[in-house]
Image (cartoon, rainbow, N blue to C red; front, side):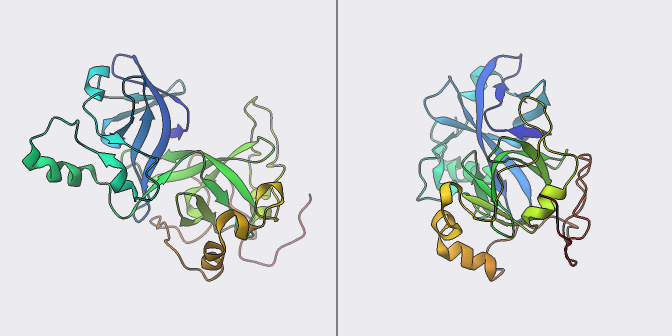
Length: 264
């Protein structure tokens, strides 16, 4: 299942439920746990557990509940950036006795290991080139993350296997592979118009508009990556760049070995 930001969302019966705004991920388990919707049904964003997601069809994310049932879902305030994702959830409108409120919040499964990812999240290579996160691919039935969909500065899109992920934060996902590894990956990425293109515009300069990596991500995070620290997304069985199932993306042929000069 591929879930991309800004894709339309429909409730049971095919009725409009809004658009996908962002997702929540348990980075310890490598699992997609919730989607967050901007909906015409509510002034706040709606938090939807993946248990209530049927899947994707014809470019739309399909939910199990009907439109009326969506009004009883928890609200999510993504603007509360000083609080972790658990602190952004509001269950006050969920029809539940007050004495069971804590039980409900625990059942939602938004924990200290939950990280929010959205269209502002950047994806950075090991040599500090960057692209923008477009969406998340997940396997059925466990919703474990299988790939990241990204867009380069020139507009081309590509899927990266989850085994390339090294560090995950809300503002940036760091990869184990370099810019050259990405540019050697196959098949070639595509632009929105369907034409093949390289991830043209990727550079080792770090930030866009000439910013240094330290200016974009903060010196503490750059030091964290260089020291191999931070929170690691543990993908079961992943020990390095590998082929993404069903994506026909070939891992770097010489990852971890002496690199040959690559064609620019």
